[in-house]
Image (cartoon, rainbow, N blue to C red; front, top):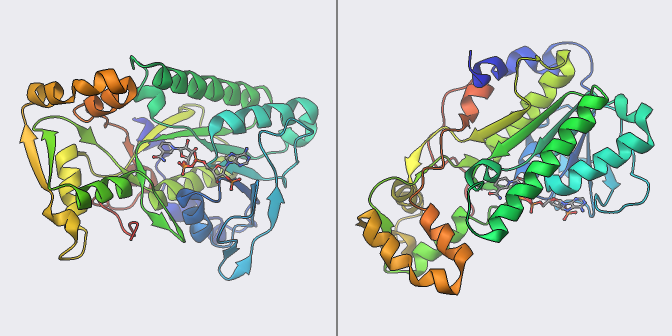
Length: 324
Ligand SMILES: NC(=O)c1ccc[n+]([C@@H]2O[C@H](COP(=O)([O-])OP(=O)(O)OC[C@H]3O[C@@H](n4cnc5c(N)ncnc54)[C@H](OP(=O)(O)O)[C@@H]3O)[C@@H](O)[C@H]2O)c1
């Protein structure tokens, strides 16, 4: 049985609204991200509190105002206690993990009452682990240290934990949109042509709504009966479609309205060696930029597809809504 098989349960089987007892409260960090906004939209009748440094732009669900808990994860004072129940975080894991560890050490009894924690890390912890530049190596180190801290804190207090490591999050939810594929589309709108390697470069982008649905599903499972010990704590996660970098850009072009300038940009397929040769001058100007361009030809896919956890049909890329 694969990790995805063991995690997959039809949504109806765990939807608390259908199974009787009132759903345990959820406290959401990172509500002011597209994924956080999507989660607010999907939460249904689950009692939800949003926590962060400032209220999110859309502080309502189903027309009802959401309780807001002011909390700076980087504030080293006494950790703010959240309502008992479940914690879900789309905030940077290197801020969330030490905050949780401080709470566990200062208030172990209230901490142990938590029914589950679902936190977002990044697939960069896998895909950038052999990076040559210092910036990416530091990123991997910070992600890994935070994941380890989160795991040891929750294990010590028997709090069920899942860490999501999503790749390439895109899409719009409420007033918020991604800043990666939408920026690529802006580039397509400005350039007459864009060279790309003609082979490789697989990607598995995940829409913020899919990520939010998986996070909510896992949070429900954790509090429904505790975690299955055979399930891995870390879940590398992607969208349902795996496609080459060039195909991803073509689909983005196809998703724009007729006449959009992004459609005019010609994608020029080059043999990988020629593509790399053209990128060489960047090595002197920005080693990080050079590696980013090199990575265009790398296969960054093979993650668990969202639909295999949610139990529905696969969704083709791009899932809508996109950033307008
Ligand atoms: N963007 C991607 O493609 C990508 C890819 C893989 C993984 N991820 C992960 O997915 C999650 C969402 O990513 P993102 O790029 O949309 O958002 P992000 O920039 O990583 O995180 C921003 C969110 O974290 C909250 N936050 C930051 N510092 C905080 C603090 N000290 N105290 C309380 N809240 C704090 C912010 O809330 P306020 O500023 O409102 O307080 C905001 O809601 C993150 O965990 C990220 O690491 C992102």
